[in-house]
Image (cartoon, rainbow, N blue to C red; front, side):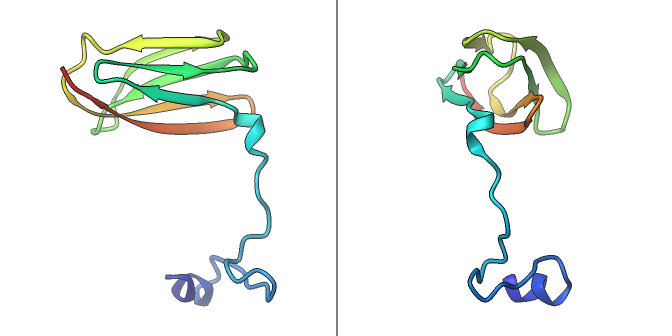
Length: 104
């Protein structure tokens, strides 16, 4: 795959870095942790950043959206059917996504 991407100019080649990675984003800026349970999930936001939380279905529909600055955010999926959802967390510094397998 790397050779295919290199030949098309999508990645660069550095002799000291064969993966073509030239920078690494500061992960501490998006210090959001995700803990999943079967019928709910908890987000840990230790820096109390303002975050937007979206629950997105497999079809791409945003089924829930909220904004908070709390340190602990717990969401229950009582009104959601059993499925796989994408939890999208947006901050002023970037976006993080988590997969949540909701079951009854």
